[in-house]
Image (cartoon, rainbow, N blue to C red):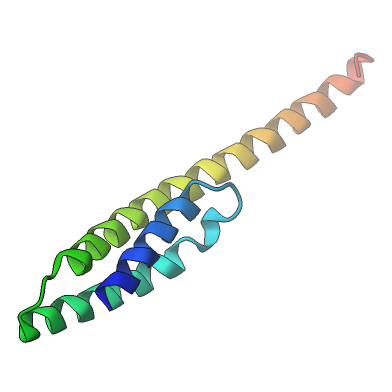
Length: 97
């Protein structure tokens, strides 16, 4: 379970940097947190190494703020693009466009 959480944390971080796909980066991050926590508790009970589970937990937790930043930047870019379009339409009255 810890290795699956680690892989999902990596996927979530990669998705957080891909435009338009960043909207879905929270899904593997949340699932990665859950599976890493389960893997961490199982590894402690069985006396195995908890390294992959801890790494998965850390990566999945880091992916959530990256997702928020990605969505915020995407929304800001869309807002600026809409603002630029509105500004160009406003100049149309002057015969420039």
